[in-house]
Every structure is written in C-alpha cells, then in structure tokens.
Amino acid sequence: GYPNDLYSEDIKIYGDRFELAKKYYSKLRSLGAGDVQAAAMVGSFMQESWLDHDAVSSKGAKGIAQLLGDKYDKYQSWLKKNKKSDTAENQIEWIWDYMATAKDDWHDYYLSLYGKSLKDFDDLSGDSKSKAISDWNKMKDSKYAEYNYDAFRDTFYDLGDVKDAVDMFTWTFERPGDMEANMDNRYAYAESLLNYFRYDK
Image (cartoon, rainbow, N blue to C red; front, side):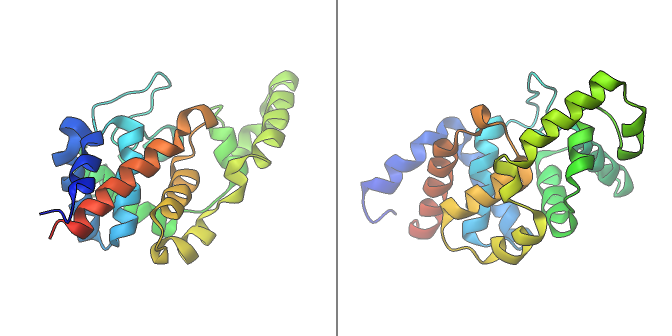
C-alpha cells in the first residue's frame, strides 16, 4: 500500500483511465523505458487523448499520441511493414522505435503542414511561398527550436526529473501548439503515475 494518503489521492486525476495508464506504463517499461521516461510519456498521452486510441482531434490527429501528417504516415507504413494492427500498444511501440532514429529536418516538417515536400517548395505560388517563409520564421524561433532529436537521444533516457522528461518528450515529439500544451496537466499526470509505481510496493 501507499506510505500515506498522498499517492492514493494523487492518482484520482486519471479517473477511469488509471488501469489504461498502468497498462501503457508497463508497455513502455517492457520496451526499455525507465520509470521516469515511461511516466512522462504516459502523462503526455493522457493530455493528448485521455488515453483514448480512437480519439480524433479537430485537426485530424489520431490515436493515443494524436499523430498527424508525416508522423501518422510513417506510423501507418510501420504497421503495414510489420503486419501489425492499429492499437495503442503498437502506436507506443512505434513511437519508442521512432525516437531512436528520428531526424530533424525543419523545412520538411514545416512544409508537411502544407502537404508539400521540400522539392515542391519552388512550385508554390508567390502568396503561398510568402506565407511559408513567414510561418517558418515564426516557427524557427518558437519552443520547438529549443529541442531536437539528437539532443533528445543524448539526454532523455538518463533524466531523473519527470518534469524535465515531460518537457523533452512533449516539445521534441508531440510538438503541440502553446494553447494545446497544458504542461501543468502533463506534469501532474506523469508525477502521479511515477509516484504510484515508486511507492506502491
């Protein structure tokens, strides 16, 4: 049981999602994630989708991690290649694999917002190209620019502070808009799950 009532109260923020949270935490641990990393990722998924793999956002983001655009396409290709079905556990497994090899090509990432590849950029109309350049200038100075996958791989797996892990996973992989980030929620979900597994012995 818990050493005091703090942790039993803490996990109530998951509501009826707590059994799923434990399941996905255990999945990440089985893939090699540390306790801090697993809790940080599940806490982020909780904010993204309420751990509902059938969730679809107003922008069309799908699944437990709310994948969109190029990431969703890569996930679908991975499912097909590995003859796997689209489940929350498999999306989590793909994310874990993806983080080990992902590269940051900001222009490709940015242009994917327009359904364009880098080679198509020169074919954009003048107005579209101007908007692309303007938005790119905004993005390169945004929160995203502070995080990249090379730094992630050098740091994330050794982090001992769950808030740091939430920050790194959220801004490197999820990349939500500032309005959608709700970082305090992510911290609370992650910390409560970590406390549960550390103290419920």
